[in-house]
Image (tube, rainbow, N blue to C red):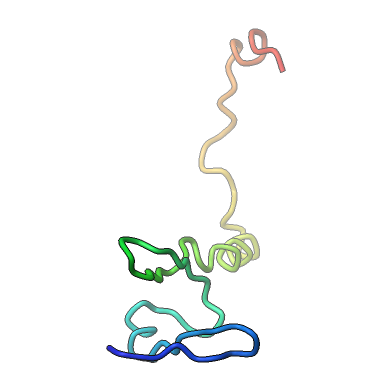
Length: 82
């Protein structure tokens, strides 16, 4: 797909077609990583998008409790220096 570099205020940008954004499940204000690899500009979705929202929802639903009980041993209590 071919596109052009355009002026956006004092910067330049590239218009990414909606069809490409849909393929990557990206939308306005999605976080991306931009890098140069082997002389090419590479744009990738930033990892861990939506985690903050998911954590808030989990907490509201009470789904953020520890999966394991406290597993502290006598060694942990007596031998470790904090």
